[in-house]
Length: 191
Image (tube, rainbow, N blue to C red):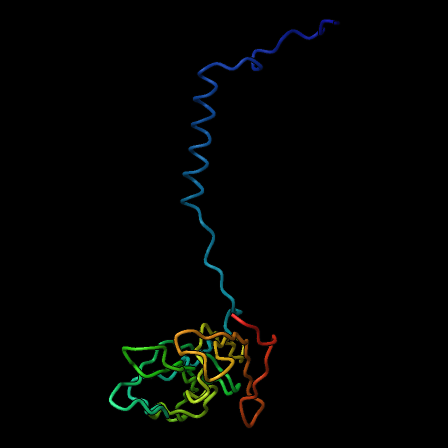
């Protein structure tokens, strides 16, 4: 190995004094950067009029709604609900899964679409997606991008007891401008 003609430089060997000087310099830069901050960003050009967005309409609630469900002495119970703009009018609708609040068995569900008038009137049922007479139970459902999707549990015959549905079907509803149209994304299969 050939020796360098240049003598070793003093600054290539670190000492505690070098580390203290470096730490002080870094601390100074951090402190200075916290004091000197750029101004806040503005999306609008200077002098442009400020626009205010309209407040979002509230989705209809389920309290006090008269669901088309015959429960006798029992009360109608909303077990699931979700909201979204299903018809594209800019106002959200609420989809509610409702059944009779009974102590025995598995009561069938009804799935209803609620809306309210543009003047903010009381919520009302405007569509029935699943009627309780169909003997279906909703396992899960979502409202997303104008579409209602649900997993429905049902029965292959009237001999199957209410406790034990033996069919599972996926369903999807979309507004076509005049009504909710149901499609089945996957074939029904046994549970």
